[in-house]
Image (cartoon, rainbow, N blue to C red; front, side, top):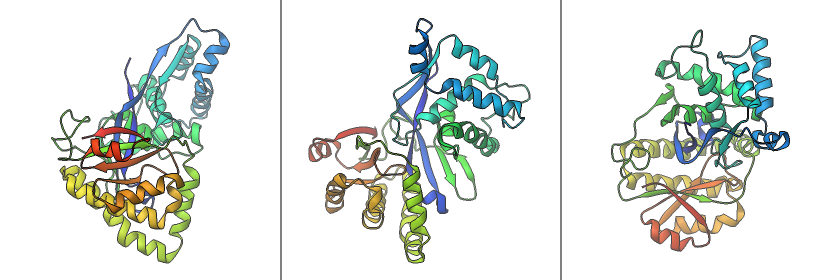
Length: 317
């Protein structure tokens, strides 16, 4: 069956909420897919399906009230669940990698009704409406949702968020790595460092927004952090690894010195180590507080030695 990849927010964590651009890409390192397990007993099936039956109830209720933003065959979805449908996924939860987003994308993709639905979702002009529909579905899991995670998982394409364009599919450089099939930004490797610390995003989002209410911090953020975020996105899309490395240095330095709570305490020494030399740089990945850290290095093998004892996952390079 079709795979639905995880999602990675490369740049724009938190700042997208105050006006900057953000760049999100599919992360095929992790994924989920539908499977049938008809031989499971009732208790086993309930454990494997987790909250899927409740999701079906939620969607059915919205549909009955005329509030569901897209037409779904909820009855067929519920029947498939009764027949043993499960969602098999290795996307880590509590990491901001889109575990619920992949599931929502799979439900939407599999049970959307073409007749009477919104125009074809592949049209760029419809991405805003698609994002709203997916946000409504994912709200079942989180109470509120931006719709970004399921959007990336469904489209399986890089998306530029924020700015006047709102939501825009973008092309990666032709020399891009595992996403496009060849190499990446020249002579650099982007990687994830697994903190092995799942977290909830909401407290860290609230922390950043509370900081932004301070005029001095807000001014500092807008003059130092936001320009580096947007410069990093531009350099990444141009395949300019040296410039991305430089901007990640600025972003990571700002986060360590001004947003320390986003960085788990045990990882602050190696974060500073990265700032002090030119082997690797680290920055927050997603909301922060745990999950993955995002890194870039000039020499991945040397970085693995420098960060021995930590789990590093090469993503692009």
